[in-house]
Image (tube, rainbow, N blue to C red; front, side, top):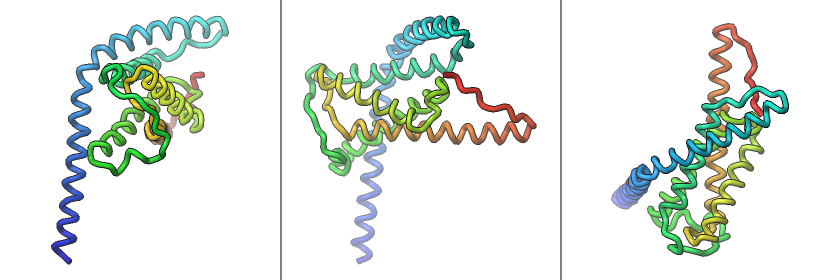
Length: 206
């Protein structure tokens, strides 16, 4: 019995190690796309801030915070570059609407699930920093779901990936985790402000 339990535990540890190794390799393979994401994001952020601040000035509002908005647009650009340029056109195409169909098949598929969650964690976090309207749970969650839906649809049309409901679910989960991290940051910041006697409320940039 002891040998059986030990063997099962060893197999599970080995499986988790292989999954982590897949995740590490995939993340390292994405580094080559960073310059393209940075270039596209820089252009997109400049254009977005120029248009958005022009509209805000007409309404008598203060300019949007440049650094958080630029970081958000640049990360969105990086996500788009990774999800499209990392695959060949026509490489895979199809629709999978079965929930949880990708988890538990093998370590490779499990790694993909974890990667889909991790990819959207910074997205949810940066959305909260950049835009006050996404500092609400449902708004942030729907942002992640809508972004993932658009990506999945474009992948299906271009043949650069399957349209999988699991991807939308895991991407949305990643966005929610990013929102939660922002909540933790807010609590820590407010605690720090109280210690310093600064009770100024958090400004919400719409």
